[in-house]
Length: 226
Image (cartoon, rainbow, N blue to C red; front, side):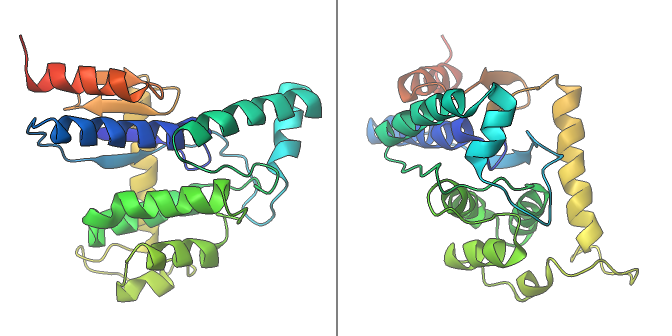
């Protein structure tokens, strides 16, 4: 399962939680679910600044025609998230460019793949719940540490790139960015223009944050074909 997602997308967080619940329910029901999950990067707002952060509600107001409409949209996703056990505090959330966060996930996928989902969760929680700027390298590093990533190179992940050659086993900073952009191209090649999108075996696509019952039904269909 490849999940195309952006870390500031509320429906990506909601969809992640619903998908995880579906997998849990299937396994709890005794179904053997042999599933490997990885994350594909996507950016809803690649123009978001990397050096400053503004309140998300202001950015939503600019996009959707005013603070009143923005408040309605944010209230709706906040209530939907709460039903999935997720706390959104969108009054505190700050707009941030997610390129660095996606680079962090590529680093984790390479060095500690079992923690990729946990780091994803920590970064989303930092943004949606804690009101932290996930464009800040210190915030991203803290998220990774709290998820259990202890790799020595983590501390230098966001240092300025150098021209010094590195081994293939330890890709350079530029390589992490390259891997992120590879994901952008991968999604474009498959005409994926919205997130979250769940892709099974690079063949079967589940668009959007489906409810957990729908996820479970579709996964069961893939596991137990008629």
